[in-house]
Amino acid sequence: MDRRAIGKRAEDAVAIYLAARGFDVLARNLRLGALELDIVARQGPLVAIVEVRTRGPGSFTGPFASVTREKQRRLLRAAERLWRDKLRGMPDVARVRIDVAAVTFDGDDARIAYHAGAIVG
Image (cartoon, rainbow, N blue to C red; front, side, top):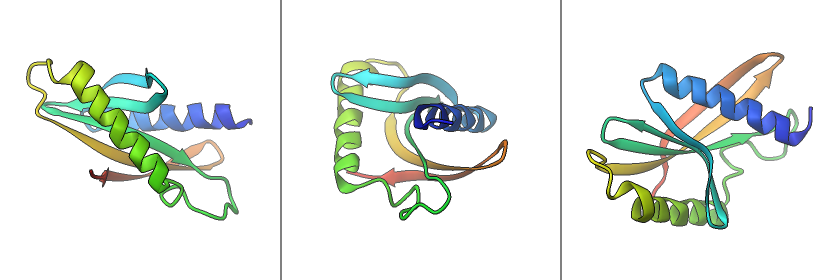
């Protein structure tokens, strides 16, 4: 399976994970100019931007460690732009949080480790 297919499979698993926890997925692979957000989901007044990470067996770094400082800066810029351009005018949206979901696969099963509020500005 190629990298793009694995990424889509991981995002599908995280979208199901979020829905099972009461989130409504608002967007996937949302482009904001040069920036892209994997998943944007809402639960009441909270909007969660979810960065989905996968790593294959034997990878040098784990999925959480793969979110570099540069990636964190890009996610913060994207969150600010999303707030300014789309969310600020939405009724009942009080805050935005950036989460990271680490997905590993064991055959057909996806295991998800989820860190809410993983990136703060």
